[in-house]
Image (spheres, rainbow, N blue to C red):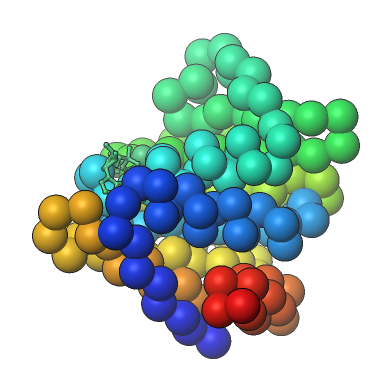
Length: 157
Ligand SMILES: Nc1ncnc2c1ncn2[C@@H]1O[C@H](COP(=O)(O)OP(=O)(O)OP(=O)(O)O)[C@@H](O)[C@H]1O
Ligand SMILES: [Mg+2]
C-alpha cells in the first residue's frame, strides 16, 4: 500500500505527525528518506511531542540517537547519515527492536536496510519548490498497512 500527502508548510508536516501519533502503539519502525532539509526531523520532533514524550539526552551517541520517553512509551529517533553498516553494531539496535513499547524513527536508514527486514512504514520526502513537500508513505507488513490505512482515513475525514 502506498499513499501520497502534500505538505505546504512545516505546520502541515507537524499536523501529519499529529495524525500519525494517534495510531502508534509501540513496536513500529518508521524509515524517513529524502534530501537534507526535507523536513524529516521536523516530522519526528512533532511525533514525539504529540505522543506526549519528553527528550532525554543520550550520552556520547547523542548525534546519532535521541530517546524520547514517558512512563509507558518511548520513541528512539536515530539519524544514520553517512554511517557505515559496520558502525551500527554498538548502537544497541537489537535492544531497541526488541522493546515493544518503543517506536523507532530512522532518518537516512540505508545502513539499517540490510540488517533488518522488519515490517515498517517508509516515508519519502520529495522537495517540490519553496516550502512544498510531497510525502510518500509506503507500508511494508500487515501492521504498517493498517497504520497507513488508519492514517489515510483520519486525514481524509
Ligand atoms: N513543508 C515543510 N515541512 C517540513 N519542514 C519544512 C517545510 N517547509 C519548509 N520547511 C523547513 O525545512 C527545514 C527542514 O529541516 P529538517 O531538519 O526537518 O530536515 P531533515 O529532512 O531532517 O534534514 P537532514 O537530512 O539534514 O536531517 C526546516 O527549517 C523547516 O522549517
Ligand atoms: Mg534531520
